[in-house]
Figure (cartoon, rainbow, N blue to C red):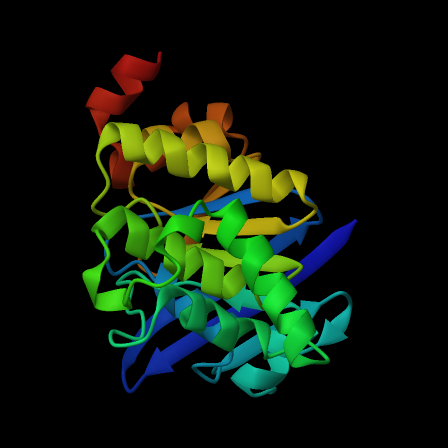
Length: 243
């Protein structure tokens, strides 16, 4: 069932067209990957969906409702949450309070926000860090806290902007397993990632951007075999290794 639909999505900054007529459809309960070179428009698309930027042209529908001109907090309340490339927790606030802030966005009471917070801390393996201030976390812990804060808003669509950045191979595998578990909870995931092995193994489908345009879309196997994608982004080494 269709959850998110982008139609001819476009964004210009002065004379620079960062996103050019991008069409995407994301179904419920899938993991959808978005890849492409730096500056290809990936984070701009996330900013347009989340309401951080206003689009120049096109439309955005979530659960068949037009959300194109809604404010970020209105979009969040409808069930879309996101993380950022650089994890920025509230530095002098405990992990628990960081997550509680997200939970209070939708919870009908403080007691329910408490329950959601404990549930999310358990899912993200942060219960033992709940009284630690955000500034004292390691990079992997900050990544999980960023994820926990978003999960606390009870999203139906979770948009993740490079959640593997700065992680070693073991931590990448742990994050991948966590994301699979989140999908099993019934949360759809839309992920930007440069760690190709991770996004290829995680995603059901992948779209590829280059210079703001979608140049390919398909299964990881189809993307890995697409010569246009290899030339623009993956590189011949990836194509040879995957062939």
